[in-house]
Length: 272
Image (cartoon, rainbow, N blue to C red; front, top):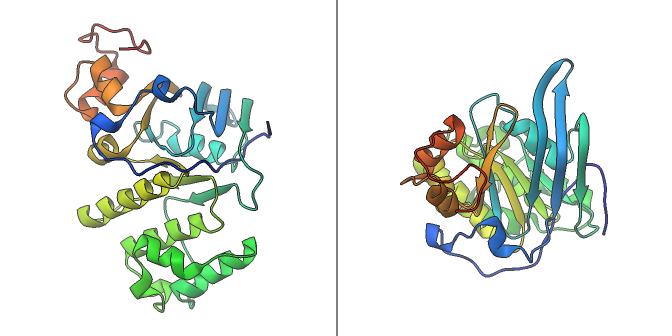
């Protein structure tokens, strides 16, 4: 087992799964799958301002894990920590995956690329950093093949997001972290972004993302982690969480998990 402080990525292949609640299982449903990245009781503070406290989560391969919570609750901080881009103040983050050239791919909330270069040239640059890759195939995967020769400054917001996702896949990292990948996009492009995430998970990649679109998260995520007040309010598959809180939707589940609504007969964190 390889252990490092903050890094991430890669996983075994799986068959593509339908994006319905019935296909989701709770964490215990795939207990035989070892986590790729594990955070153990981590704290994170900016100076005297505490953002995360005593957070423990496990990110598994071939799954989409969504971090959900109010603005400013620490979703981006946790995502960056799990991606090895920020060091926790306390606790540890371990990586137990293959030793690859690029263990983690990352998409920031607002990706920006050097102007004057085409989409293809941009990916060729990132490919040169990992030694060998196929930029054309990366553009094809996210649906940007027709825009290969378009300069990055001429890309729409949605296309820029897709180029960012393509960049994050260069080198086939075992873990891909996407921070609000559909932020500001129209419904059609938002759906496409989540479809790409689903396709990546179907190849065995661990996909970790933040999002405010709970409808799409409910349809596509295998695991949901609710964050509130600097900690984990609850976590599990969308269907298991809905059962736990006797809710009809992930949105209703989210509200009950964060308010501690005891309308549910289960104690938060217990199995349904």
